[in-house]
Image (cartoon, rainbow, N blue to C red; front, side):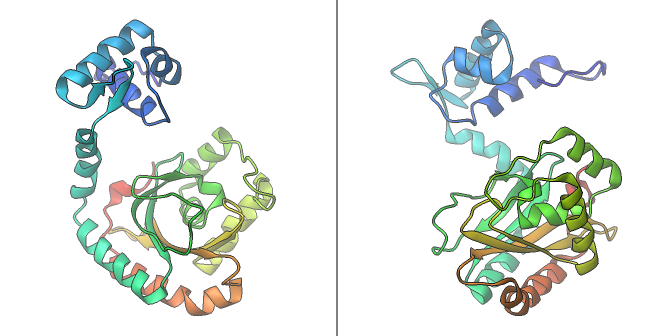
Length: 260
C-alpha cells in the first residue's frame, strides 16, 4: 500500500480503500487472503472487513469468507455520474456501435492501466470478458497506445520505468524502443492500430478525444476479430466513424480525466 508523509493523509481511509481493491481480485476472500493481497496486517484487515460488513459494503458467507455487495457499485457510479459528458458519450458510443457493428469503448489512462469508463460489446468477440471498469494493459491495446502516445513526457517516462512490458501473446510489442517508435507513429497518424497483442484473435483501432484545453483526455476505440479486418480495411471502413465520434466529444471531456 502506498504511504505518504502528507499531514492531510488519512491512513485508516487509505487502508480501507486498499482492502476494497484487494477484494476486487478473484476470491474467496478470507482475512488472510485480503491481508496478503493488500499488504496490511491481519488485525487491521479484520477490523476493516467488519466495518465494511456493518456498512453494507460486504457480507460474510457461510464459510466465513467475505464478499462485496452491490452497494460497492455506488462508489464507481459516483465517478461516472460526476462526469458531465458521460451521458452524451454513452449516446455517441451507442451510435458508433450501430454504425460499425463492432465492439466500442471509451477509455481513460490512470497512469498505470487503461480503464474502460464505457464499453458496448459485440457478440462476435467472445474471448474477452470486458466491461465498464475493466482494466487492460496500456502498452498492448489500441486505446492504451493512444493514451500513452499523447501523455506528457513525465507521465510516459514514469509509466515506462515502472512497468515491465510483458509479452501477452506471440506478437506483443514488448520492447521499449519499439514501443516508443510506435507511439511516435500514432502521434503522426492520429490513430492507433494494434493487432493480436492482447488477445491473439482480436485487433483494435483507436483515436484520441480532446478535452477543453485541447489535450488528449480519453480514447475511443473499436475492437473486432482479426480474421475479419486487415489494417487497410479497418482504416478505410472504421476510422472515419471513430473520428466522427471523437469529434462529437471533443472539448467536452474534463481536464481531470488525464493522467498526471
